[in-house]
Image 1 (tube, rainbow over the protein chains, first blue to last red):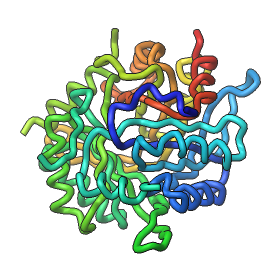
Image 2 (image 1 turned 120 degrees about the horizontal axis):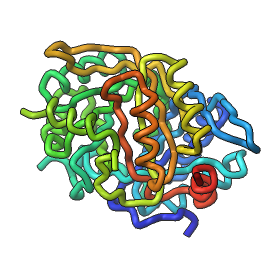
Image 3 (image 1 turned 90 degrees about the horizontal axis):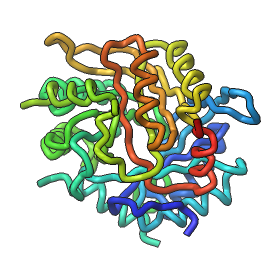
Length: 114
Length: 114
Length: 114
């Protein structure tokens, strides 16, 4: 299992990764929906990411990809992003979806059925 | 109960919906605060949403509405958005808030008391 | 313990605060990474925040700071933001990270070790 999953608390989750170009973000988004690893991917950006790298604080321009999917597809989604992302260690974090529009939540299942 | 709530893990939650115009987003935001269904709504956008619709991958311009509220008001908030949103199946997803500034969290209660 | 933590469900969390200038957001972000209270802070904005204040609905321009950190550092992060933010009651909300890229999640630990 690739995702260090702690046992998500729900059937659905939101997964965020970030990348350094709008084109790269859209390419990831298209691939994720194409492969039915997420029902919808929202590209937000440009954002400014502040972090420490080799002892220095860096500020980079990035774009967020916010994926809405089922927890059953989380590991395959993490693997896909790790494989297709051009960073060595891309940010990929999942937060649990614990409620919402039941019709939308069932649409997530329909769209991500392998 | 309209929200397919899985038994949220906390008293407070963040609820996101998306819509296809800045005006529509602000109208929803104003209504949600007016009705005390959320203490604060943040409108983020424009974003690019990638999803499959009738077999084709679509890319739409949308705006996120990020609502901060209490879990007690979740079902009423979901119902409000379903009623006032112009999509048939709007995205409405809730993630649990499990910590933060205690003064802000109690402000969420004060502002959303019916 | 300053954060009204409900007992987060995981070792990692995402913490969001919002502020009324891009400079203020970046200053907070730099300080948080400098102090190893967060491994990465993403500044998103400008956004439009809709809320009620003294009976009137307000709409302000703000910037989100989205911090990726460990739950062990949550209370110290909440305290830092409360001390360095210029609002009396700043929004600080934490959502649990329940899965993702294991290499990234362990990087969060490395970067936030006091």
